[in-house]
Amino acid sequence: MNILIADDQPALLRTYTLFLSSEDHQVSAAETAEKAFEILQNDPIDLAIIDFDFGDPLAKIRNGIELIIQTRKSGIHIPIILNTSFPGEAENYIGKLAKSDKKQLGKMKLFFKLMLGSIREAIETTLNS
Image (cartoon, rainbow, N blue to C red):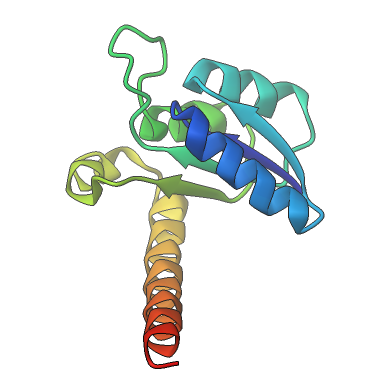
């Protein structure tokens, strides 16, 4: 699978790239939303994992929600996972998403709840070993 990782934190980009590459995925990385949009327009991407906040208020595309909107407007309809450490802030922008993306966001929340459960289980198993 061809996966785009878009985040302004180089350490996170490296971590995602190493992990996903080790799982035999092809990874493209972008440190800005503009670069991510360029990759989405020009490369065959099957899934995107994008940061909510790119930290550049002067950028043409300032955050992950705006990137999703631009991506959809350009006719690209791949699955997109919005990654954030500030979920409350992201919730303020959800109204800007199309109904299909809101439905996908609901599925992602379920996925992350399941993932969180798996993480907790792994921690408990490790602590009890």
